[in-house]
Image 1: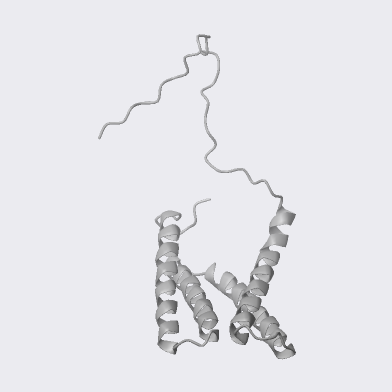
Image 2: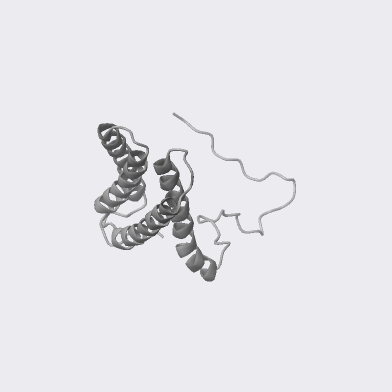
Length: 156
C-alpha cells in the first residue's frame, strides 16, 4: 500500500539556510537521578501496603478489623515488598525469556494468594493465577523482545 510523503514546510519564506527540523527519538527525562532512586523504593512499598490491605480485607470477609488482621496485612505487605525487590534484582540479570517468566510467575502468585484469601475453591485460584501468569509472561516477552537487539542487549 502506498503512503503519502510528508510535505515540506511551505510558509512562503526562505528556509534554505535553516537546518531541517528533527524530532527527538527519546522522551526527555523530567525527573532527576535522586527522584528515580527514591521512587525505586517508594513505589514497591506503596504497592506492598495496598496489597497487604487488600489481602487483610479479603481475609476478614467484611468483619471487624482485629489486631491479628492488621498483623496479617502488614506481614503480607512486608513479604510482597521483599519478593518484589528480589524479583526485580534477579530478573534484570536474566535473558528476556527468564525475565518475562519470572515477572509472570510473580504476578500469578500474587493474584492467586489474594484470590485464595477470599475463600473460593482452590481450583479457581490456580486457574486464574495461571491465566494471569501466562498473559503477563507473553506481554513482557513481547516487550523485551522488541526492545532488545539481536544479541539480547537492551536498546537505550
